Length: 241
Picture 1: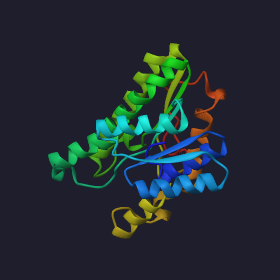
Picture 2: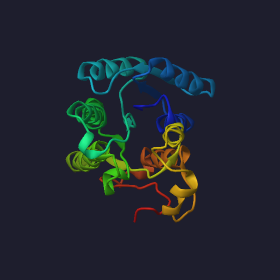
Picture 3: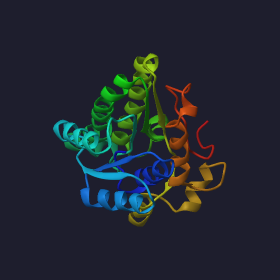
Picture 4: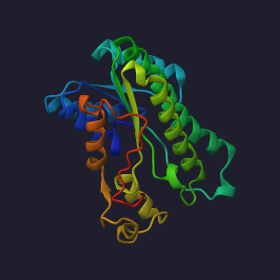
């Protein structure tokens, strides 16, 4: 579980732990990852924390080696590690653009590639990438973020095609607006409007919560989802149809 120390990743890690899976909480913030893993263990789960920057190929290699050493082969991968922010398109610097690509898209690529070795060897695997509605329809002042999340969607569909015959599924979950500490921080800064404005675009009339996304990931990681691959499963309250 990448990006598992906070927000969506933390909720997904907790749900997978409740489902009885052994969980590796991989995050650039090792201390926060350890706190999440400790909470999973306190609830009776089997969890370890691994610190790594998903944009660093060597760090990803070492992280997956550590996970195998602690928990065994990797058969389920959920990629949630990402950075997000708001910059007017003509003000996005090349350094900023490259950092978004490195974390959001290359980081997903590196982790999927690292996990596939075990999945292919055992003829079973579940890959779930967390993309974004921004990657489906664009987003104001998020050209860098939207481009990387669109890339995650295309990457996931390609992995699904390449590995379906090997017993491996790959699906992507693009949330819309999820109530989270990151969302509230952006609202505090004035880069996002209040919840009552955001919900106007959502037919269900409420913001999503992390547990909504975690529930979908739980199903996609199960045996029951064995005939579902290459799909974009939106968690958006009907905002994108």
